[in-house]
Image (cartoon, rainbow, N blue to C red):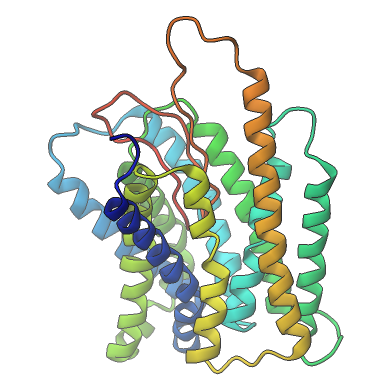
Length: 341
């Protein structure tokens, strides 16, 4: 029987939706954590806890061999760009609502194709730019709050985070293509780099960790173990078992979960303007994503040479939170897949 069996497909879809839910909830968790701790301390603790968890998983995986040169050489610069995303994003979510943060950051979906030209030739169709325009208008409505006014600092920071994340995603796609990089090893390098980058800036205030109590540590552990390590590895497992298009669609529900969590748990209030902005943001990102995906498939089909001996290896690209990796290494090895944050 070809293709995924229905129970397996449902399980895979459930895992991807769970990843989107976890990522959507991360904005409220970060907002709660930064209310009791300095932002740099939150970032260092999140990275350090993630690195410890990743190193523990690597230590139990004795069959896959040592680190490769590519995993270290590529992981270091990607760790720097990932840290840049998180520092701007975390400062941003500290100064805006969790719902707005999740919706504005989804602009990454339509910004990334403008930067990553590797998957399409001749430029994107005009309809894609129309979808991007809908998203920009949605950002303006979200920033308006209870009426039009000067943009808030947090909203502008989230807008900057979306741009930096798109640069990071495009960079990962370019650096990892056609390289057999193991996701866990790459993630471990990135978390170690982030820990090193934030150690010195946060060192003067690390003593505050002793006074945050059980609730504060629970937020940090949730951000590190669930929103980072679990989400990275669960996404990898799921994407290997489904199509890139289906994975992108399900992971694209992240801003919906962010808004739902913000409204139900944080008491965020949506005015008619912000409600309209949320609807336009979700519609615009889905529209833009579908246009880009169709254009990528069409140009790939047109550029593909006639089949002679064997079919080329499948290349998957999924736009997610922190990275996009592609290419299919030989069977039996851990295939690189998209990671986030």
